[in-house]
Image 1 (cartoon, rainbow, N blue to C red):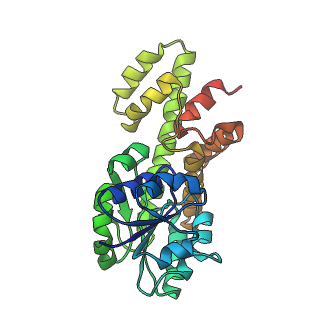
Image 2 (image 1 turned 180 degrees about the vertical axis):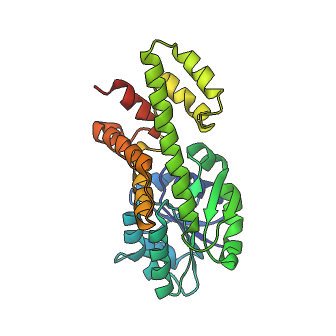
Image 3 (image 1 turned 90 degrees about the horizontal axis):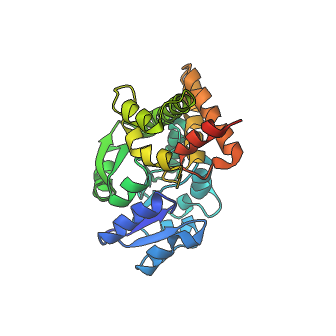
Length: 289
């Protein structure tokens, strides 16, 4: 069984890595905050002192990192993973990045004769823990076949969308719609309450209507109880909306709704809500003076 290098052990990555470990894969891990990987180390994972060291001691590298800037540093920095990978080794990047950046990393990987797949995931903390993520992939068919046993453990379905960057492109669209839907629903709730409609009635009627995204039913308990433990931190959806706006600019597409939504989340982050779940945008809109 191949040894897997896993870099990035946040809310998503830690759970994805744990599922691989449960099924018998040997892990060598790296995270900038070392404590986040302690539970994996207790169960036999090996700690790498740098991304380069991880790459030198595994067969396949998976990255699950926060931003394109972090991915670039982890991959190409002085102790970056590309400096430790062997010819034809496979790098699976599950970080949410924009398509042009995915292509940039693919180009950089080719310079080192490294194979690259972009494989972002749709799903949050719960699906990551239960191994029910949706993998959105771009890359070579042969490389995807090699990666598929790992995807099958960490996710419930894998969709191959075509060349490098297409997986990243689809992830942009999904998170764009998620952010826009969240703001629209939060605005409707806030307005309904201001007009004197009971909150429970608002939930029951709006969520049973065809105009509300189904995911809002899953988010309902957070909004009802005013508890926003982060399954998908608000600061990261704001980042993803920003990446979508970059892609829109690069492709000459006008996205006024996207840009307004991005700035609403940016304001909420400036008000100290960045580390809460993205559904805390309701808290921001309801209490904003």
